[in-house]
Image (cartoon, rainbow, N blue to C red; front, side, top):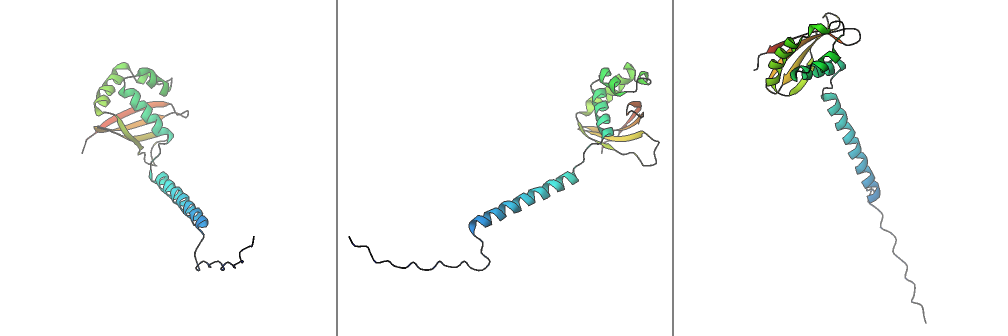
Length: 153
């Protein structure tokens, strides 16, 4: 047997300047996609509102009042002033809150010069809104609770 004559292979074609190999290009695409996802997540986090602790308490109180749940209200109230929320007062508030539907959002609107531990909230429902004033004790328990229905636009 004879071996075929060896033919030299042509030299490899050089890549054009600025071209990246396909593997490197894929890595860069993944890196840019990850960076874009991080940027979008940061923008969304900054633009959306997160309830502070007082807004969470106001939401819990509003839901308890809306459901006419005296036990839940008592858990949020200061034990010394818990007698302020009577069954009759809770019932009147529940009669006002229940037809408004589900809570959409709770926003604190307290002015900076307000009385210490007195917080004001605008509570938006599906079918209306309520302005609440809640005074807290140092342990973040409710001392006083007042509300006014705000006119719908």
